[in-house]
Length: 242
Image (cartoon, rainbow, N blue to C red):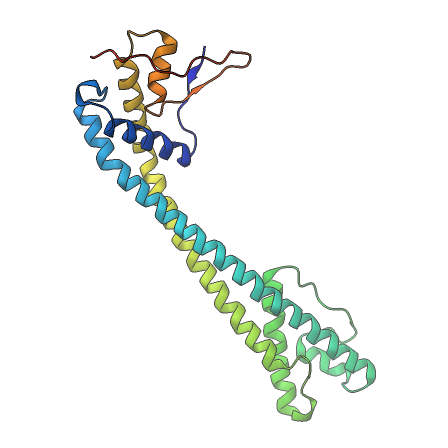
């Protein structure tokens, strides 16, 4: 026999509440299975629930876009940091710069490889080291300034990545706050759905089991089929007035 299953997700909760509200608005007063208290609760709660879910969805969209932008800015910075070090090391190999200048940029004097830039923190760390070190090198000899990429280009990318990180962090905080608002409402949503479903099933209790379920489905009640069970009719029987 099919069994009643409560919503497990917020989308399912919204669907259950919306179905009940739609059926309520299109049912004659004398045939409504819900108590006055439950009707009032549904009419008051559903707009609040929908609004909070809409705000959460909006915050999620903003946070997702902020993450996309930040990843783009971070990747630009990562490439520039890598290229800066590679080009500098090539210049050392050509004899344009001395190996003794590597430590000024935070690099190992005897290492020609690019440091690990896999983590975001590493990218920011090496960007800071290169900016600080190149500033010192240029102050000592302005003709030794790196080209392609210049430190100004790397500095601009560093500033842009910092800004995108801040925007992403703010968007995440806003999303967390909206998620908490929905979390706080969830127990109330579940309690209201349970009241609606209990009252609907009680109203149709004199009908056959299949007829009861068919009518109840119109109010948003979900019945899960057990494995191997045949499908049952979905057409509701005429409701019995309470």
